[in-house]
Image (cartoon, rainbow, N blue to C red; front, top):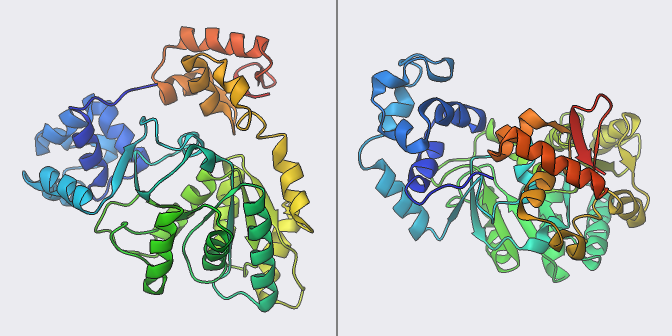
Length: 365
């Protein structure tokens, strides 16, 4: 796996924070210049044509790249008690690293623990019925009793209920924000956010100073699903953002569960439709646990994991949730193709991975 040097690290973090640079565009820039440092120090003229944009298209980005930006931005992170994790840091969540477009930098406050990878996301409407509130509280409590971390988006309604119930039952919870971690949205969840810091973490791909804006919420939802082993949707209207999270979860190879509701309830239109489309219907917590247990046995087997070489763990972390080719693994890990092919052969012999039909893509066994 690629390692970010101490010299490269501040440039990597600062470059990813500039406006107009998303996850995919960031990697195009670094690939073109060879490093984040080279991209940062390049002249404006050298940016012309990068990632398909002219100098005019890069104008706002390059204006922000003033001389004092790097130091002032890093100071803002430090004094805000915010941790900036690069994609290749050991603390960067393995599950999130495996998705198609993981954030090059993830901002966190609080503490993400190793056991947080045994988790479940709970999302739903901002205006739940009494039925939705009751089901959310019940499922959250039972998941916490099973030792699972609860992931949600700190929004009003189902999100807030899930976070609060997890804390009430002495469980862990992670909240993913659609703004910088120096701004809590919605404001009425300031106290909840503070409580989460005691038994979990606040997470965002957006740098400090970023306001909550409509376009950021769908991107935020891919982080919720990307961090999770599965997503439970509790009450979602026809155009609910929770449905976006469910769609992204399916694209990432996660399990999607939906709580059925009355056909006369507007809040259940989305969840009932998810069930029609193949989401797992939940009648009890056992429906969730039985479905994910086999899929995630590897994560819960420290004895098996400890017997593997570091390079084998790197490859497995990329294959947990979706099939990848050797070329894709080269891109994700920075390792050479021949080395990856050799490791895959060993992992197949150990019964940990298998090749998909055609033999060009590999997944966890």
